[in-house]
Image 1 (cartoon, rainbow, N blue to C red):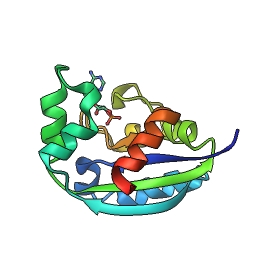
Image 2 (image 1 turned 60 degrees about the vertical axis):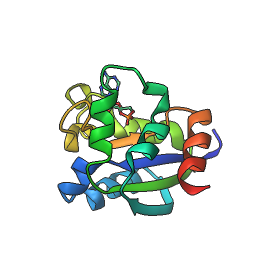
Image 3 (image 1 turned 30 degrees about the vertical axis):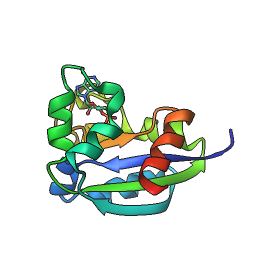
Amino acid sequence: MSNQRTLSIIKPNAVKKNKIGLIIALLEEAKLKVVEVKMITLSVEKAESFYSEHKGKPFFNELIAFMTSGPLVIMALEGEDAINTNRKIMGATNPAEALEGTIRAKYGDGMTENAVHGSDGLESASRELKFFFG
Ligand code: CMP
């Protein structure tokens, strides 16, 4: 597997709970390197654009309200097989189903408030990194 970059977002519930450092520690322990980082609060317009593939789904409005409810930490992560490594350490989308020790199992509060977002493939990683870091 080659060196890759992927996008990671620490969501508002985890930021509110003071878990930024603990989440980054898990990512770094998984050999992912934080190569870019910024803290921002998303506008509704930008959140809708980022999650446009989910528009029309039953959870879309709740997701947008949540993702614009407070600051986020946006990171570009780099490493060997970074996209899959990040997905593994994040755990399943639903924290109730996430394996013990994963970020979502530790810090997720529900399907929407699941602590982190990570790109799910090469194409989305490229699009999402461009979306936030140009
Ligand atoms: P995320 O990785 O940010 O991508 C889309 C988000 O939608 C997902 O994590 C969840 O937080 C949220 N979501 C809420 N309900 C669902 C659902 N039923 N299926 C998938 N994602 C959901």
